[in-house]
Image 1 (spheres, rainbow, N blue to C red):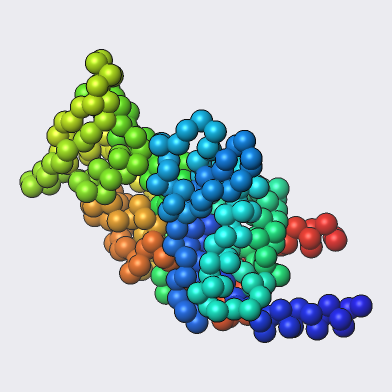
Image 2 (cartoon, rainbow, N blue to C red):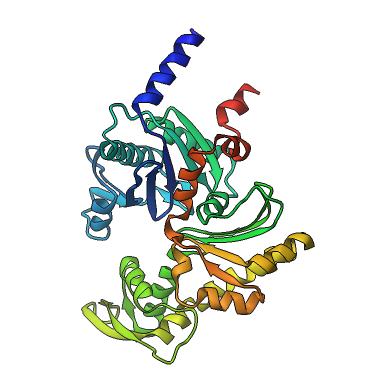
Length: 356
């Protein structure tokens, strides 16, 4: 039977295309080494609770959020980078993988997949991600730690003995990792990232203006005028929601300094954890990091002033990766073409663990 299964895997490999996946709390991205990014959609699903029917995934589901009747559940099936709803994640991935293969005009979607996982995931959580990708149609799954994918996607050579410090700020969590010789030497992971900053803005609007706003609107405000440093321009914009006193719609104007005040405590926590990671890093690697600088990846790295503030606080040069949002999925795509490196850094499969 073994030769038959080997032959079948070879046929499936010929008919399908390899995929790199960045399964994030806020967004899922899928890349093919041949075609580039094929899927860049919110990690959201909409399900009819009465019939258990999948109504929408991705951007269509995200548009329903906060507007749905009670019998339709619209949610993010991942929290802090970890699967919280296995069935919804499986259905979402199946749709996204099928969508990617339609773009590739592939006959049979049974891809080999490289997918990132957070640093502090347990074996059970890693198995959940692996099982979800297998159930969505993959024939082989390689799990790789997210900061390593980000470093590769930022065009850094992780296999050399020089130290690399990556700060990856996504939607659900911020991961800080010192990488050397294709492994993570020191790291910190904290549940403060883009979603937490949105909640900070929601709470600030409630406390200071008696205004209730949604997290999607807070995200929009953060992108437009959010900054970790106060500037002379001090731009402003309208913030709309419900007045908590009258219950009626209300609009106010907020400025950059107010948004800075709302998020400054969370930003300070991220910077403090970067400094704490440096404190437990071997001195030789700290010298390398001082020379090469810190690399920021993830959507949170685009927050205005973050690189300058971190550089000032840590006394180390800081740069934002060329394409920080796509670093992880581009790293996964690069690994698909480097079998030796992929073998070295792939985490043990749950099936291998059971066999042992």
